[in-house]
Image (cartoon, rainbow, N blue to C red; front, side, top):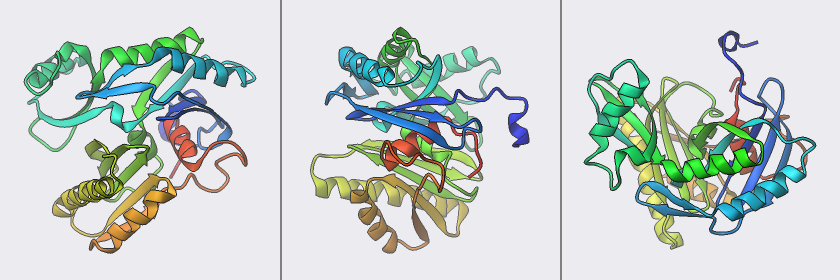
Length: 299
């Protein structure tokens, strides 16, 4: 038993993951450290549109239809669940916010004021989360437009499912990366890329990108972003850096070749782990997204 969980309500054992072309469902074990069941259904492509602040619009009817189909195949509709979304849905930036008020509503208001000149939309139209990075009031802010997120929550609520934790793919799978040393977690799914830089078990930097259609340009952009992220860690931490990759096989070779040409880097493929996924249902990326979305176990 993990003592850290004794005084905290565990997350629901039900979790969903939305990708560019499919919707996945997973039911986790009591310890939230293994998947007992996985099911997937296709989503219409495209079922969402991107804008300058992540997701711009959701094609509601397509999501509703896919969710109905998915839930119809389950023994029982879950009352509550978590949801993992594509990394391209969010934007992340570091803001020099100064000392924040202790009350969350006041802190968010101060952050929105700081974001006013940085965003191409009204600060009141976004949903945000934040955590301190470094000193002197620097905050890592993750944000997305409120309306599309609210639409997704309404679709699930209309089907009888209340969503709790909602997060991008890279933050979900970061929970599965072993070790507390300096490392970089990178996710590639469709054209969405997420890069999380972790030090001392804490998130210190987050990047998200949409890859170009050109395969050569997409590979070059991914390698460039990895070099920047690893360089940040080496400059501040020194020593070797682990790079954990959650992506399809088509990207494994690209990142492995980049790692072989980059000093101080150890590239590893992120894996759910033996005995943590059912024998049938879903892909490795589905398993990682679903496990990370409600993870309570030890890495």
